[in-house]
Length: 276
Image 1 (spheres, helix red, strand yellow):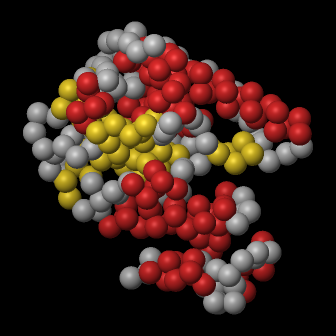
Image 2 (image 1 turned 90 degrees about the vertical axis):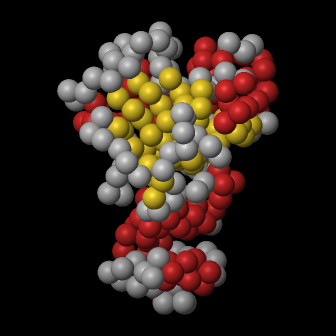
Image 3 (image 1 turned 180 degrees about the vertical axis):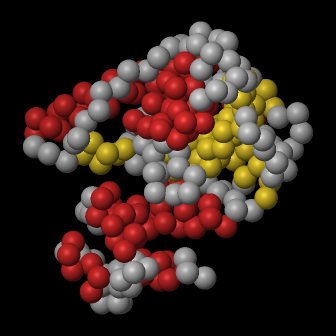
């Protein structure tokens, strides 16, 4: 179980809560930062945690497949976060890996991605990189009993994450909770000083632009805009998935099946820009 003794995170699944990216974390993310040279023992986590509809999904299933037959590995991270359920599952998979794990943060390790980063025996931060911790954040639907249960679940997850950060940093849990309440961004120097990372990358990691990553960020921003208008994750992704095969007019005709509630001209302009 890894080289370091790491706590396991238990998290009950709930059909009433959907964990999503915070818009500020998404805006901060620079998706074009991808390591220029990696090898077969490098797990690349570039994108949205829980994104299962891209060519390089960051899901527990994908990570489990990667880990098969591997020994020492490097985990390269540039992610604005995403689903805490998926991030916790990935952390637990890495925690159970019986060989050395070196985490390289080459962009952002924000939100759920910071949880994944804690699985490293070494956690190395690149020049100009950031780590962000906060309380779990998402959408909740249901009646008052469902909402009460979701509040309880979110409190349990926040406490488990605080325990994890406490184990990594050696800080008092109350201090970690305050940092999570405040949504704390840490650059490389601060992350190392406060114990969230063990050191800097020995040299600046060569990166190369990845246009697909920039496109995923744009899609995630559009999905976030649709979610803010009251659409479910499934409806939002269905709109994006069907856009190429059934383009929407500026009047929003392609949205009739999910009852548009706002002027989508700005969103459609973003969708159009993805084609160029």
